[in-house]
Image (cartoon, rainbow, N blue to C red; front, side, top):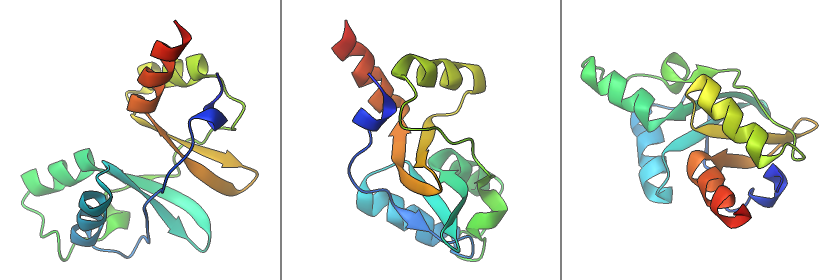
Length: 124
């Protein structure tokens, strides 16, 4: 199975100048644990609930702090034809939980660790 088979649904997008509070609200509204950060139609980062937890633990004002200050910049991206096994290997190597899938310069969506676990169970 390839990543393109797992891309679907809505990917929540915020700008780098959005507040952490707005990003957290977007995550809650979409019941997801990440948002992608787009600036001038380009993927510039990804912000996860882990990033927000760290910000909270440091006493950050979520209404004043900007996404660009806390996001993972320039995340690795993957082509749609990458296999699930390759995606799993990358996650295990890096400790990340999200794989942005891109075709040329277009974001197709994000494959999560949960998506990959589901795909692995379907292959057995």
